[in-house]
Length: 389
Image (tube, rainbow, N blue to C red; front, side, top):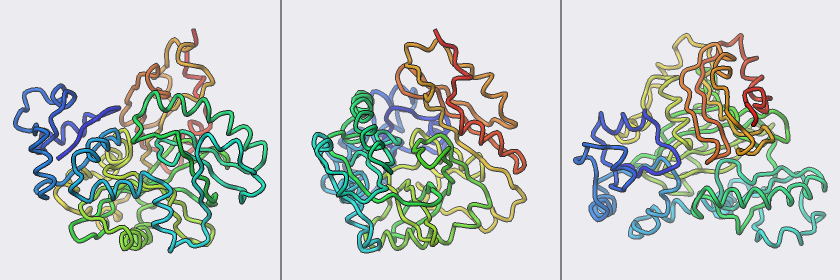
């Protein structure tokens, strides 16, 4: 069963639901998205019964649905397992035996200004204890960074609270934690009935600089899968020895430090990458449907996939508004000009930038010799595509 919720449901996910008769919780939103599909829609009471009695696997495309799970599935272990990941302090405590030297500390938002920064181990990262989409995340390497972050957070948290419910973004508490050097990756996976991890995608998360914390560019490739599959599965096995998850989808971000050690950054429960991005990208890149694989409890045949002669990178580019302009100052975004910058655009998803601080998502395929196009979009503030008022 799927809990559909805003902010975004992809056509690919809707087609998967309809073509495979996957049941969906009946809400005004799902009813409008699935007209003439009454047999797929399940009432609130029936959904609670089916999930509580383990007759249905559960997936949600959006963390906005976490509130429904917390309220209606108290007789299952799902609320507790979700809390392990949504609450970053609890997540750090869960894995503290794996990383005994990793520093973390929870601080109330209204107490941040009173902290003595000299007592904190720089460099460090500060972020909402319950957060999403890199909102409110800052890397602190100097006292000036700290002062700038305190100023920025006042505006960022007001904006975030206007967009997301408190279960997704809670500005009342922050976590300060060690900064991890190394390449960052995003993982889509699920834990099956036996608690065994099933890997569905590995994406490299590229940044424009050491100070960048944005979500502009993620890409996957056969070479990335080859290099990291076994290492990631070993880590996920160790993680679940502590968490005890079964029938549980997870999107987790991690870094591999200079010693080759995987250190998780954060986990996002009950879903794959937000806004229907990374799971849909896996279909474009590797030809399998991660949503179906979860519901059918199947695993990709990675041994066959990695033998394919394909050295391309398959990317999802998040067109966050980095222009320095507010939405009210923007007349239009030139999507045609954007598409002309890429050799093989796969799919463009336009987003209303007056409602969300982004212009859309672009899925692309990039040849091994043409990574310059990805470097360019990573470094761009997107002003070149904007028509100002």
